[in-house]
Length: 292
Image (spheres, rainbow, N blue to C red):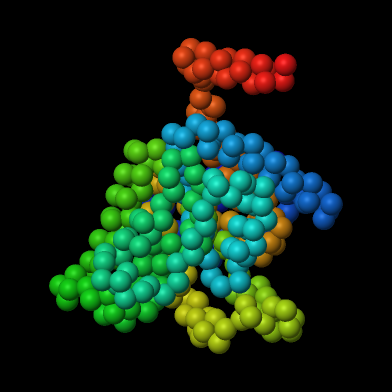
């Protein structure tokens, strides 16, 4: 499977226009059977790479997923990471902040959840909410008790972009690779998925009146995403705009990027020292003696 990274990756300093980026593209699979085979192959590759990544214990991988409601974040995480050892993978979802979280800087709650070396961390939404939903609903800044002088709309977002890119540079320089996915869903496809959630009793729990309220701010969200991507997509921590109207195609694109990212690292299982090999040899001898 070949991905044209130049098409979906946002370049450093790019002037982003999401309206010019497709939400639906020709699928990389030709049938449902082929889709299942391709996804299974990606999951197997990812499982093997994650095992070496865990043993190597030098790098960490942070995957960030951002999207409008019903874009398929949960499904991608569930399907793509299905073969990964739970010991080596952590998933965090960031909802409405607690009182304790509001009393700290906007990166504090997510920093506590960063993956350890050898682990894969997944943020289902992330610190990027602080320049997305907070930008669309600036009254949230008041709840965060940000000093008046720092709530100036001409400064606050620029300052937060700088804080985010500084954090991601710091992480990169300490061995954490950050890969960011925006699942690019059309407003019409979201409407269809909302209707499906209403019409299927087993999916009613997924639907909230708040989801409809947020649809009213679609244009504002797109503008917030565009400026955010242009300011925070870097070679060290790139943003990928993944066409998401076709859930299966989106899963294959995301899984391939994750596989390629891990495969590009200099991963290897640690070699045992001479002392360790001698220790293992002695243990083996004792175990063999027990059977005699």
